[in-house]
Every structure is written in C-alpha cells, then in structure tokens.
Image 1 (cartoon, rainbow, N blue to C red):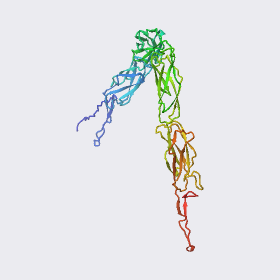
Image 2: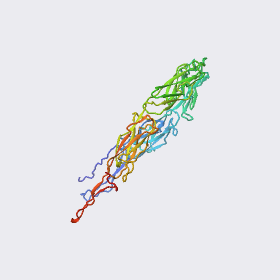
Image 3: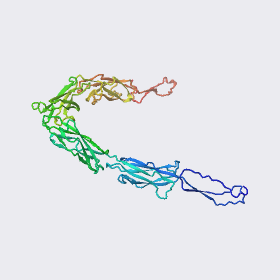
Image 4: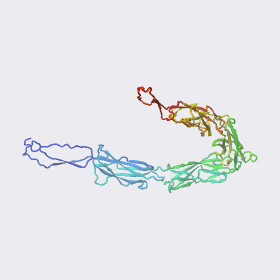
Length: 575
C-alpha cells in the first residue's frame, strides 16, 4: 500500500505430539519480485525463527512384576514408550540404563544382570534385553530382586518421563528334592527284635540339597500284621531334617512280637509305612513301602512231577503237566504249606498259572495242543516251573526243565502246483518266468519248514538243442532244484528263451514239477505240467532281386529273380 512503512505475514508453526529436539530453527529472507522498482533496495540479512518443543513422552517398564521359573534360564525385560501414541513418538535416539538390585536373590548366584544400556533409535517404541537366570540344583524358597529403569546421566531430558521405572522379578524354584526310605522294602523275621525307620534325600546330589529345614510325617498302617499283636509302635511319627541334612530317622523304633506257634510254612504278614511332606518342593518317592514279617520256619520245595511228554497234534487236545512238593515229603508233614499260592508253568515262553491249595502236595495244569492246518515238522518245546512275583520266598522252585514233543497231525497235507497251466511269451522277451505256489492250505504260513522241488523241461516244437542251421529255442532244465524257504508260498524260475532272426511258427515246450527224494510225503503235487508257447515276431522281406531288367528281343526269355532278405544268413524263413 502507498506510504505503508511496515508489512507483516504469518508463518504457521505445526504443533505435533512427537517429542523432538528442544529447539529447532529455520530462516526467513526477503527476495525481489520481478516488477519491483529498482530504486527499492532489500537488506540481505535473514531473520532466524526458533521453535521450542514442549511435548513430553512417558517411557517405562512394560510390567511392574515378573515371575519366572528357575529352569527357564532367561527373562525378557522390555521398556515401552507409552505416550505419545504416534507413529514416531520420540524423534531422536536416546539411551536408558537398566540396573539390578538384589533382594533375596543375588547377582551371580541367582541371576546375571550388570548395568545395561538400552538404546532407543529414532521413532523406536519398544526395546528389550535378556536377564540370565541361573538354574542350580538347590531346593530354595521363592527369591526376588528388582530392576530399576534410570537415565544415563543427570542432564537427561526432562521431557522423557520414566514411569513405571521399577519392577520386581520373582524367581520360583522348580527343583524337587526326592526323599525315600533307606530301604526299598523291609523284610524282617519275627525274632528280629526291632526296626528303626530312616529316610534320605537322594536328589539333588549336592552338598546342601535342601537349604531350608523341613519335616516328614511317618504314618504306620496295619494290613495283615496288626499293631499290638504282631508289632508295637506309635502310628504317627515326625522325621525332622535340619538345613542341608541328607538323612534322618524316626524317633521311635518298631518292635516285633514273636508268637509261640511254629507250623511248617505260615503266611507272611505285613504292614505299610508312608511318608508325607510338609514342603511342596520335597517329594517322597516312593511314598509307601511295605514291612514284611516272615515266620521262622522250614522251606517248601517244588519240582516237576514228570519231565517228558510226547503228544500228537489232532489226537491229543491237551497235555496235563503236574508239579509236586517233594520237601517236606507227605510222611513228614501232612500240611507242608498252610496257605494257597500260585506258581507259573512256562511252556516255550508262554505262562500257565498253577495253583496250590492250602495243605496240598500237588497241582496240575492242562496245556492245550493247537491243531492247525499248517504243515510242520515234529517240534520240541521246553517247559519249566517259575516263580510269580507274589510267591512266598520260603517256597523254593526246582528249575529243572522238561521236554514236550509235539508230532504234527498226520492228516495235514499241502498241495503244490504250477501257477499257470500255460505260458505264452514273445521270443524277444528272452525269458519266461515259471512259478510254483502252495495252493492249499489257504493260510498265511501253510508250510513251516524249508523244502525243494525239481523243475524239468521237455522239448516240443521248441527244442533245447541246436538243429542244423537252427539254434536252440530255450535252455533246458534237468532236475533244476527250486527252493522254498520257511513260510514261503511261491517261488519262481526264469527259463532263458533264444531270440533268433529266423521267421518261425509259434513253438512250444513243456515244464514239469517233480518231487525230490527228500520231499515230505504230506506235500502233494497237482497241476504240475505247463505248456510254454514261444511266439515269433521276426519279419522276412520278399522283393525283386533287381528293380529293372534290360533284355534283347531275340533273347528268347528273361530270368526274373525274387530274394528273401533277413538278418539270418542261413535260413531267413523256417517255414
């Protein structure tokens, strides 16, 4: 405007939520317009505008508490930019420090975290680091330590607020101390007097397995043995373990009552001991054991009544095998064992329970003889008496074994035949595969032993020896053995076929299956003859010997010749 000494314009400053450097500047300068009068001069000094950022960001630990199992070995601790929630909350890189402070958990013993710098890049929203957790074998209480988030120096910008800046890390011990009785089982005699029950920490195997004192409750429960008549003790006792102690015993002994009766072999009596722990990290294993009270008496001995049997499959359905108590003999004791018990008769690995009643001298079991269709050789099985897990230790087993011979059913038989009654093969195939199969009985394993048969060939129009200019048509088989291994039901043999260049009619020869001198008579041969046809595919070409003839008129005649061409130089056509 004319005569106006001052002109102003506004520059818009963008207010965002991003925390930026405290001060940012830019310059403003005057520039001439194309039509400005030349008599108006412009000062070249620019003006500087400074923008002071007033935004704040809140950065803190992502959790105020962490809980980690000792065997996890590592814990990820993260620091997050909570606000502002823009794509780029802080527009410059900065650094924070994570420091660990011991509580009941200590640096180097329970965890590893020296003061660690956490570097945030420009626009970064989250950064994490890993705290190493030390997994030891000690049984410990739950332990804690704290991690503090702090600036690297006092001149750290006040526009980044650290909150929350402290987190508590709880380390839960996953180790389990295994406590067990000092014996896997207690076996005592009535005359033993008394027994002290002790327990031991068997795992972990370190000098101080449990770093806290603990106690175990010992419970004593009747079974066939009764407190007061067979033994005397307190039913509930406490076993105290001091810190780092590996073993401790119950304060009260168990006393045994010796009764005045002494029969031959009496029942054993027992009661149970149980351990209960008052600390979750201490586990009794096994938590229960049995105390067995044995009577001071003689022993009983058992043996096989007979050690050899021979039976025939299909004739004998079972074989009855018996065992007897031979010591004490019946004349010495009418009741050698006053309770019933069971032993095993093992026949070729299969167990058959054999039960003795109270006061019995003998027990028997019927072993079934399987009558199947399978063709088998005579088999011999071993049988013996064996203990059961529950058998009283005062009963001895004579382990002398017996022999059971099983003769196969004489009516069983197997049938072999050629797989096909006729085979057709092209000469250029160079061989024909002839197979023999067991067709009966129709079961997975019809014959349970190895054997062999003989293959023979008989010339027909196809011959196995050369004839003049003609080569042999196939390779002869003369009593060629064909072996069947155990459980095989099919065997084959490749008979070589001669591939010549002579054009021939279809020719045949015969294959037969014959018995060997050692073949089991129960193996019969049926359909043991097959005819093999050899189909010729050779082609002979018939053509004029010359494609053009020239003759004088007075020659009287002209000789025209026809030639048969083939790769065979002697006899191109054998027809």
